[in-house]
Structures are given as structure tokens and as C-alpha cells.
Length: 157
Image 1 (cartoon, rainbow, N blue to C red):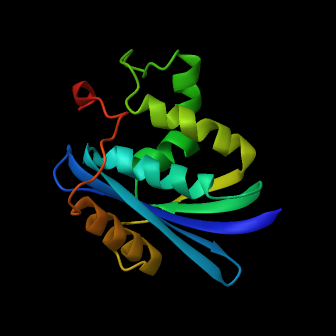
Image 2 (image 1 turned 90 degrees about the horizontal axis):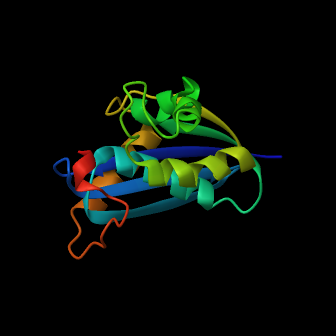
């Protein structure tokens, strides 16, 4: 199984507001940057979107070391919140609907397809790939004419 390193970050100019996401995929000596944005979204959606797009870019099952500065994303996997939400019919422990369900549901088959290990890194702490993803995500968030995030639900904020 190929070993891939994936760095991700999301950014929002306001929350909600214009948002951007970025991912860096590294396989051996090759590196690929992916990025995009939406005109109105949330920071958490952009963090999830970065991981989703990074994993979707893989052409075959891989072992993935995924680095994120999003505790929301990392904890949902490592602390098994995601599994609990599914068991509870997409309700939180507080019996409220899970936010960003569309993205979590899109992420699930990718987590089954790939062997993904999540690592939380402190944001804005000088980790070069995290800093680069942050730069790309912020750049995209500031772009004019961004598409609509069709999964964004204003009622969830």
C-alpha cells in the first residue's frame, strides 16, 4: 500500500463568510497542492472540505498520514465522535443534528477506502506545510466570484 502524507487547512473571512480550503499531498518526492473556496461557508466546513478533497485525489487505496490544525476534524475521528453520530442517527450527544453531515457522509467511504491516521498540529506555529495550506486557503477565501457552498446551511451556525 502506498504511503501518502496529507496536510490540510481551511480558512474563513468571517464565520460564516467567504472561505477557502487547501491540501498538500506528498508521495515520495512528489507533491501536489489542491485548493478552492466558496462565497459563504464556515471554517469547519472548509477544514472538512480540505481533507475530503485531499483524500478524493488519491487514485488507489493508500496509507495516509493526515495532518490538520482542526481539533473538530481530528477529534471527530480519533475520539470516535463520527461513529457515535452515525449510531445516534446523526444526532450529537446533546440530541442535536450533527453539523456538516453532508461532508461527514462524503468522508466516510474515503476513510473506509484508505488507512487514514489523523494527526493534530498546532496552527500558526511554523509547521511549513500547515503554513502553506493556510496561505492557500486564505488566498482562495479572498477570491472574487467564488461558487456557492450548496451544502452550507445557515441555520447550523
